[in-house]
Structure formats: structure tokens, C-alpha cells
Image (cartoon, rainbow, N blue to C red; front, side, top):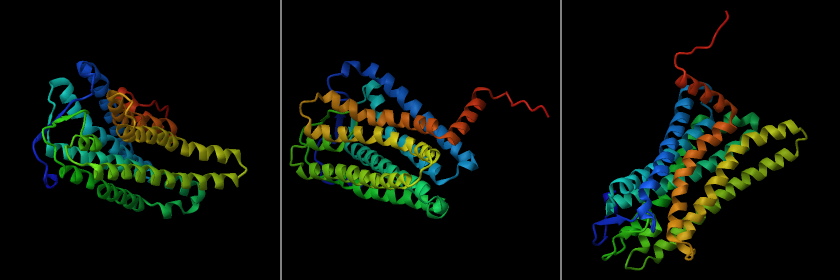
Length: 323
């Protein structure tokens, strides 16, 4: 990421403040931070392990869930380790290249997460509206291509953020009132004109949220239209069950993302610590809740995870076979 180091003037390092106004409580705040992070890592690693080992789960829906689990691991990893070093050891300094690197990978993970939710909506549409051609339209290779396309889109959309920040003059201001290097927060520290940063950042938020939600909404409108043509209540219930987990993820993801993205720009009456706490909730709670939502709502996955958990808890116990 050294290429991002273009015309950024002194200082060569920044100082992360953490949660403004709550610095004295950082050691206590670190407890839920670390707990949520560790549990989220464990849950997503468990999903990856189970899906990898079970051949019956090597299907498009579960491959998409693997991609989601990878983003749920990478996103908080961009934030939490540095935040814990700040909370526990008072290591607040971060180099300008380190700040830009964190900014890049963090925002790429967020944009990629949204792209996977769109792909999941398309997967549900094909499974419900065109089940006979499901394996043809959405093969494992097609899912891999969708994932690669989402990653390329995320990189191309996010790359201008650190490049634009690297061109700003920062004079003597070194204090970042946040737990990580958020794009607009760092840009607002500049002693120069950051209008371009603000406009592009806001445009990126609306492109991701509006475009992706529109595609998801289109998929579900087609699903609803297809279900209205079917009189079977059993079919309705089955279709609803296959979509419930995905709908829950969207309801958890987009409202928090929208609030945390817009709060720093328009909600001047909200306390700074509220901004920071909501922004961190996106990186802490979603990776924790996503495995739970899919583990509970997806029967096949639930059964496999339960089997592996039983083996871990009771490694010496085997199932009794009367034969």
C-alpha cells in the first residue's frame, strides 16, 4: 500500500483516540470487544470447517455462505486487533500508510459483504422461481465467478478512497476521533478542502446501498410473484424458510451500515461516542450473528454443525449400534 503515500504532508503518524468521551472506560469496553470478536471468529471458522468437510454441503448456497463467513472474519480483523492494542496497552499511534491500508481493506470487506448478499438473493430467486435449471444457472463455477466479480467491484470502488485521502494536507492535526481509520473521519481532519472525498464517499454509500438493495428487492419481488401463482401453503412455507435467514441478514446489515455511514456527515447533534459505537457494532455484531442466523434457520447446516459440536464436546462417545 506504499503507493498510497503520495503527497501526504506531516505528520507521518496519526493517533487513534478510541471512543471519544469514554477513554477512561476503554479497559471495560475491551471486554465485549474481545468477546464478540473471538466468538465471531469461532462461529465463522466453524461454518467454514463444516462446509469444507461435508461433501453434501458443497452447493452454491453454502459456497456463498463461505464467502460471507470469510468477509465476517476479515472485516472485524481489520479493526479489532488494533483497537484492543489501544484499549489494553495504550498503543494509539498508527502510521499514515498503516491507516490507509486499514481503510482500504476495511471498506473492501464491507462492499464485498453487500455484494454477497446480492448474490444470495439471486440464488434464492433461481432456487424458487426456476428450480429445474438451478444446477445449470448456478453451478459452483458460476458462484466462484460471482465472488470474483464482487471482489473486483469492491476493489475498484474502494481504491479511490485512500488515494483521495493521501492527497490531502493534514498540517499538525494527528488525532483521529475513532477506533479505526474511517475514510470520512480521516478526511475531515485535513486542513485542506476535502469536498471531493465527501462527495465520492457519499456517492459510494448510496451506490452500494441503493443499487444492491434494488437488486435484492427485484429478486424478492419476482419470488413473491412466483409464489402468488402457487396455491400450496406447504410450498409457500418452504420458500419462506429458505429466504428467512437471508432476510434477517439484510435487516441486520443495511440499517446499521447506513446509519454509521451518514451519521458523521449529517447528524451533528449526536454525540461522537454514539457515532463510534454504532460504527463498531457493524463490525462486531454482524460477524457474531450471521453464523447463528444461518445455523438456526438452515436445517442441513444446523444438523451438520450440531454433529461436529457433539464430537468436540464428547470426543470419546460413539453412537450405539445394536447390530
